Image 1 (tube, one colour):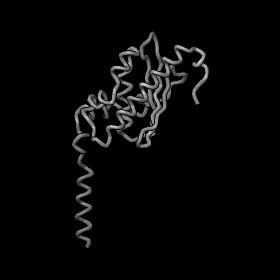
Image 2 (cartoon, rainbow, N blue to C red):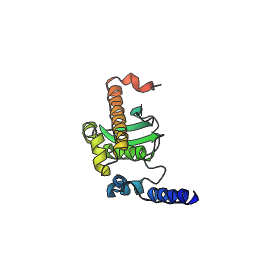
Image 3 (cartoon, rainbow, N blue to C red):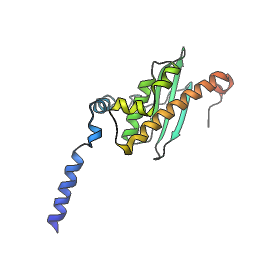
Image 4 (tube, helix red, strand yellow):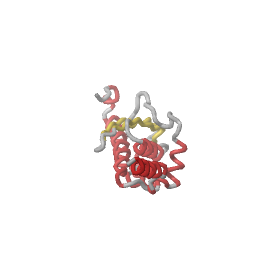
Length: 158
């Protein structure tokens, strides 16, 4: 009995040490190295021009904060209570939007675009890219809404 248990433990230990094939892509590994800092775009911006908060189908919640200057995304940050894949997808979404105009950001940030930058993700994690892109799009929509109705900027969402 002990031999069976120890052989199963050895097999599971070997499986855990090997990265899943889709998560071993060079772009993903490179991005993971850059975001090891706990402050890499994972923060809350004070008085954002655009803000959105969404909860995905898996239960992960993401918030995106935007600062807009001269119709360009000057600063973009996010917070999430999600898994590592959600963190990476949020980081890529903010990178894709930063420095671009509103229209360029809307075009550049999509679930497929995030997956392309990362070199793909397992099917079970692809929803994280959709959560990040949709949250960013809603933050951009929030900015546009406030821009068209200036009084809204002084009343934060609850």
